[in-house]
Length: 199
Ligand code: ITT
Image (cartoon, rainbow, N blue to C red; front, side, top):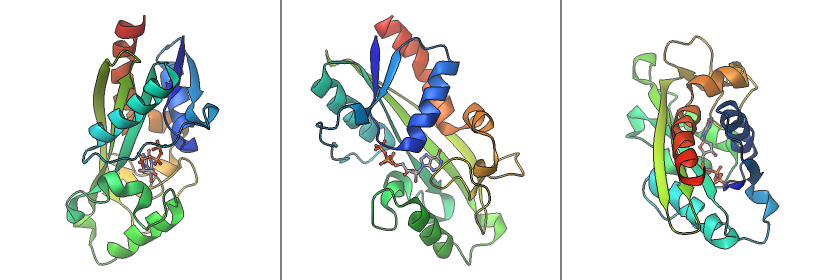
């Protein structure tokens, strides 16, 4: 069966395809870009889980196919969890990863190493056309560098150094990142749910 990945973020799509294939999910995974006529849903939720469910539900309803969605972001301790659900548009324009990262580094310029704790969070949602819904979450704790390092991944990867690592997420290989990431954890937890509900 076909499973729609309800995201237009290329970085997420690449990771999700690898994570779900590694977990042995036999479904034909198709990005939301295969359905260009379906308008983007407004992310009006106040949590990652709510927004992931909104995105999955919209695609499942519009296509009549099961859909999974990812809502994720970077939560910075000293900013009380911001950018959080606003991570994709922290500097104003949706999806401007470079501007978002530069603004965040500027905001944290005076924060010393002892106070640069942060985590990536991800909610993975599954929605079926019959209205069945599930959501699970994962997180990757670490600290924020003062300057970007590495070229792999996307978004805030060049500044988050996972706990127990000397490299940033952007210096990990895709396999290393997926093995520990918020997204890897959330979607590996979603796989048995997909199996149970879709076979
Ligand atoms: P879709 O809604 O189409 O899935 P989006 O990019 O708008 O795409 P989100 O609203 O979930 O998705 O925003 C997530 C943002 O959080 C993303 O733009 C990145 O800046 C950041 N982010 C999430 N996961 C990340 C990761 O693994 N590495 C680095 N940054 C990440």
